[in-house]
Image (cartoon, rainbow over all chains, first blue to last red; front, side, top):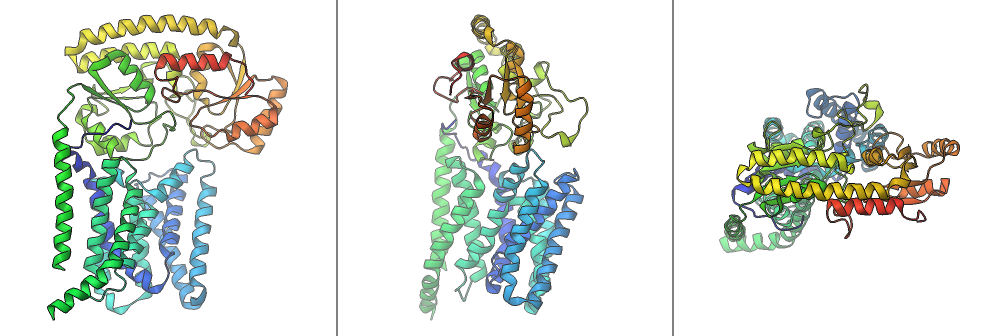
Length: 263
Length: 310
């Protein structure tokens, strides 16, 4: 069981869908994460991801297929309803926004548990939602998400200057609903927050360096999980944490040194 | 920035260096590669192929085969396999289809000789009269835990022999001889087990999950009740109370659960009913003395017939 497997170069091709999923998540989540951090609503993604997950569970209790359009519609609808509620509460009670987000998270989780109480694989489904199964990602899924993310990024960079709260929330809901099903809640949170934390104090190249950091972490995590035979999602989270910590410590002084040299 | 890029490309170079070393090591072992979903099938195919077979089990005795965590090595192994050997009957439905898709190995596709389902070779019990998801974790193809009946193991071994010869005709003589040898030892062992287990006939035992159905069917033991209210669901206090009432009319001998199941519900019901709890090895490899199918059944029979005072 634990004897080493012989990895050939072509065997690493099996990690390609997972790596592409990582690239897609990176492209949208690093800029979204910067905004989440700036607004100080860190648990927004956990809450919205959980609400989208609740939508998937509801769809499942109607016996709809996990990848089917009805499931996607319900998950997306649930996430959008969630952000509309939070957008409303942010305008009316900004001082308790974080508390409301946290409450939404535990409520969505608990309702999910109740709905799955009579489902023999309920525990597994809840765990899959959290940990994700990035290795099971199919090319068909990737194409759909790529199209969706292209639209999200187009809107994001077009209206970036306007700082519209509603638009941010809507794009966030759409992105998270897709990425949670691709890689799970843990990786979504890590991809949003950790690179954004690492590049928080950078004045130049912040986004490109955030992208580079995240892509390196996904590649390294997949590579290590293959060599050490460990679940991929968890290894990637650890790599994201390690690389982000390194980058946060080293990048600011490195960059300012380079700028001085140029001057 | 340039220094950054240089460091980055150095790391990438280092990583690709390791991969190429791995590639060089890969061209060993010319044997028939078997990817078994559960350890009992890895053990069976080794009985029939010996040195000619390189068998790997995706799950261990401590894992519930209904659900496993995706690991890159599973995809890589299935990619290289000549034969996929699983229980079937929907036991692995939660992960095997995805694994097959990601591995993309044409030899082990569902419609190919390289794909072998053990449960499909034998008659199955518990096939539902009508399908209804509200019944819980019911398998439309019947109860999948067929490996716990030695008679069915014999039938599966015979079908597996045919499949091995079909995939690897050059090994026919080796497989046939190993099969004959296995059959002789297995029939002898079965007689022994049946003699040892004769006193168990007609006894009633409470189980956690109906994974012991085929074992009990073989030994003439009756399932007195299940701790799960419905297959796959965690037990509830109300269910245990009604089970206790049921047992007052027709008592049971003990409570049995598998090592990959948490003993908590069994212990809870033990306090309620004063019945002893027995953790019975469910498959090969659970403990040091269950390293093959023979040892597994030796252990199961010894535990069931031993003093029930745990």
